[in-house]
Image 1 (cartoon, helix red, strand yellow):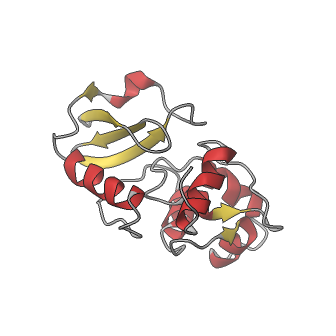
Image 2 (tube, rainbow, N blue to C red):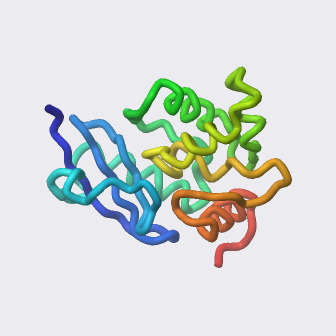
Image 3 (cartoon, helix red, strand yellow):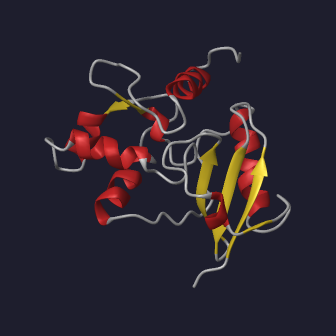
Length: 165
């Protein structure tokens, strides 16, 4: 059985709940996020100064300040093999760029799996750090985002260099 703990930090997108299992980040959830696990599953609430959270908090602050474009904190992503393969591709999407669900499916060698890619993308447990917000519809549409389409639009605009709201 793993030891879980969590902390909550503020961000320009509302409070973020960081969840670690055995000292490794395994969750980053926004308020009201779809597929957010039950609060009881996050373990003990601790200060953001307790390991492993300080480096995660530092990198998130640098990202939101526009000073960091790629995270390098260790994460443990728990999901099916297919979900993990999708999430592994998400971190390859460059900062400020987007891929379509179809493009992501093609990169996985499964060009007809865009719907399955979308479902896996929506269950990404470490949003922002594993940038699921960078995946859009084939027409450029801002289709679903676990944190809400409005947040997705704001994150993409932020990464594109638009002034903050």
